[in-house]
Image (cartoon, rainbow, N blue to C red; front, side, top):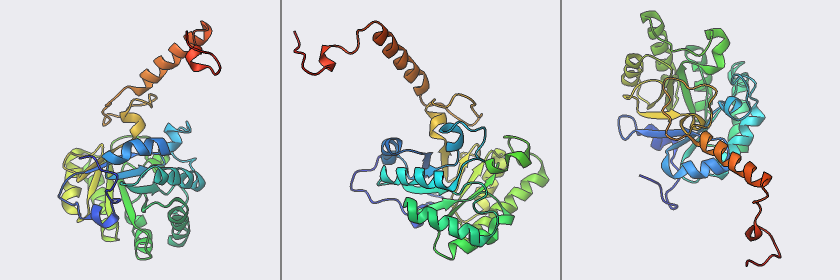
Length: 274
């Protein structure tokens, strides 16, 4: 159901209470205009560090800076009034220590106006998640395939294929949930593993390349709208081909400019229509 203008913004406690209930709808957003379009239809807008690839053209999320995330987070907050807005903490901004993570997360919250931050990692990040959440910063966790660890993982590939790896990821998920995360993204895992994690933890799971059994789903908007064509993961469903439509519109515009059929009299000032 689409939200009306008078619907209050979805809160972190409201999302946490959705465990086992109506599925949580989540999409990424990086700009004010896109946030305005998506906001009535989603529960959660994720300002993902995926903007490094789909907006800035980087090969990975690693070059994304804290200032970039704050600027885009603020843009999405300005363009939304219904969805809960969560901002990724970028690579290097939280791994050093819980104290460094708190300083940077506090900047994100204060300067962007977002309702929560997201961090990647499992057992090794549990202390940091607990440190943040006990100090008033809501945290969304992220386990499974970790894009910020792409170099250590050896590329973007599904994880949890063997029993030992699957058990490590299950332990990661339990640790982050127990540390106080209000929800958990599960990315790029075997379907049965994501289903098990959803049963294991008491907080909602949000899948991306995971399982329909998750408590919600998220996709990168540019992927599902057909705007990002460099790479299409197996788990992406293209709901539109806006990239093709934009290219066709640009080609028509170029042809009309070259033919001097645009601008016409109706697009000019001081010319009366015949």
